[in-house]
Length: 163
Image (cartoon, rainbow, N blue to C red; front, top):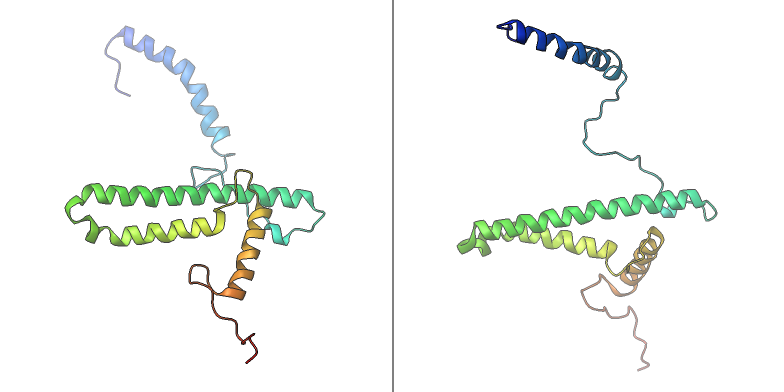
């Protein structure tokens, strides 16, 4: 702090220091040494067991898995939104040549949107981790019987018609 030029400034500085010094001392001596250091600006939750790892009668585990599923869904929503925004920004910036220059961003966005829909699509408004687990199970059964979704139904491995 610069040196006070007259008696009025020295008086104002002493009143200011009268109120500020205890606050600064308390922060530097008590608060900062007892504070946990987080390298992130948001709250980090520990990973909990997923719905398929919970026992059927463990309601707390199921509730925690459902809350983790909801947090993961919000994160995945934001990832897809950021990728969409990047593509839209690319199109606005590269307007005459956007079909050629923005193709990698568009492909990455389409892949992310497809993966989001595979995991969360058609769950409805009252989604939860159990419904998503059942959707995943049904998809795996379908792919085992008919091949990858979107490739068309494959022929059965044996001929059912009598010749």
